[in-house]
Length: 355
Image 1 (tube, helix red, strand yellow):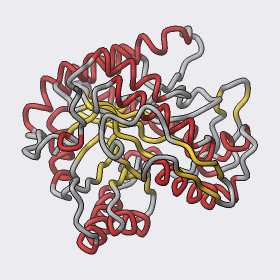
Image 2: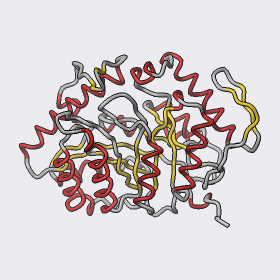
Image 3: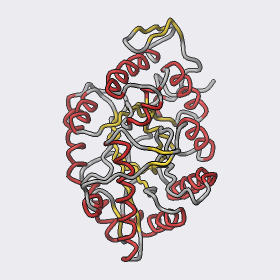
Image 4: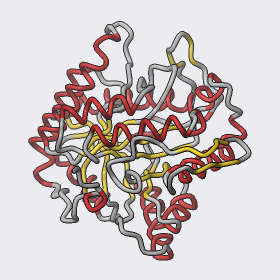
């Protein structure tokens, strides 16, 4: 089992100058690197303070230079927003510059506000995504290829440079529902399980559905994987637990604005909405507590049989609390988890030799 650290890019306090955002994000990355994580995950988002990561491949290239032993998963690129020819070129260039350590997830875009800002019809996002992904796959099928679809077309062309990993970096799909995870597993795809803040039983349902589909899939050279995201905060102070649960609930109100409504964002700032879920309801899907509690919860999740866990601490905390939690995680939790994988390095058999 592999461990990644999710770099969210949330900016919860405009009283703290936003020019500190990326230096502090890189401090989180450095702390995760010192823990010995297998790599980093980060997603594409636009026009809001909840996720300030509009250019994830730029971040991948930067992290790749800083941490040459870590893999880099863009989770996800919102394919409905892009010309696939440009996306393929940027993926390939990033994969070359990071020496074949890039992996790429794709999604249709779950935040209507972001798609609206780009003039993309949210009601057609699924069909646009399906067409764009077919067009992207076609670009990796050979040289001088053309494509004609309902939303995407291009004449004969060859993307240059080719990727370092052949025929392309490992692809992932973001899934929110068990049936979607099943179909991804059946079609030979890796799954990014978008089950943040869901209770453990829902995570298990996603993993079980993926495994059912995986059993029906044709054999592939690459192992199929399913990952889960898990928010965690480690503290030695019982009073601190309740405060952080309230912060997590507030963060859920912001998140719900983006993913359950058309979205209200004013001057880049996400507006919290009222939700029916209580602090305790939302708390079931996160791990906030003392080290012993965190160890117990993670080991319970581990029994579900996922291949990779992506930890995140960034749910609206100030930076000092984030770093203190990561320090406690590294010293008091991680040694008890035995998360390292015995499997061969992902993608290693597909990296082309350099002449």
